[in-house]
Length: 288
Image 1: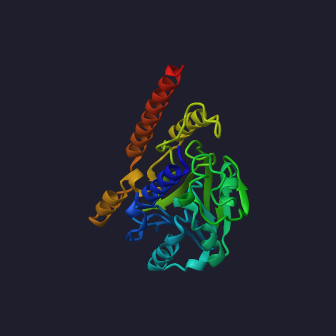
Image 2: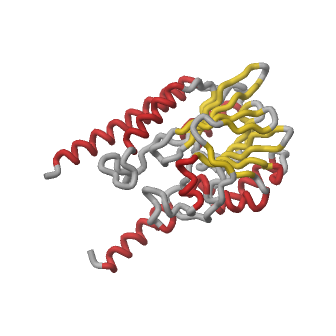
Image 3: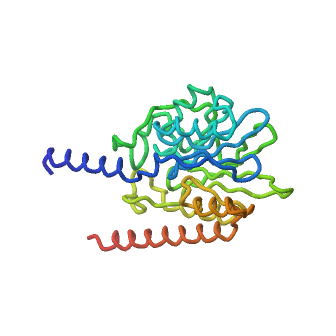
């Protein structure tokens, strides 16, 4: 293909990525979920604040441009932005981690990332198996303060989060679990990293990520094994955030308690993965 056409194709791809999700930058009302857990993200990109007497934990820094929005949401809830002591992510894609360098600088928070995603975070996305050559998906390289491994815990105050390696979407995609107490009850909270197969992902003969299919299989085994009362995720759309918040505002104090919704989501995403894998296997077998 002539260089001019290659450049044009890349420019179009970048434009599509940049315009794909306008709700990523659309403000959304920050709100209480359960216990010491709050939503502080945009309409399309989920960020969570976990408040403790010893400081707060933020999950997902989102885009570079998201940082003022996250800060505003934190402060609207009555918390101080510079009380964030720990910064975590669901996975090392630009829409969940691009704001990390700025948040570290503003708050001094310790940045903790699953081992499989550390290289991507510290390279600013350049070593990502799928998007490393896509300019629009790169972000400021950020130093990781603590490398996490599957099953590690993050403790602050009386809050304990467990990091579960759920790879495939990225090599270090992380699902977080914690307990939240609300109305005298203890709830198992699961914040899903991402079990989704993005457009363009090669599940078969992927030279940059040979074990991608088996990693996805591992992810679904892990997700099925986790007890879940309150189902959350890297995007609010995973768990029907807007509908659940509307129910809560209408008086349903248990609007976010949805164990069946979690099971259905994991089952649906597992079926989508297996269908895509089968499609790619059949295509590979047809090649001479």
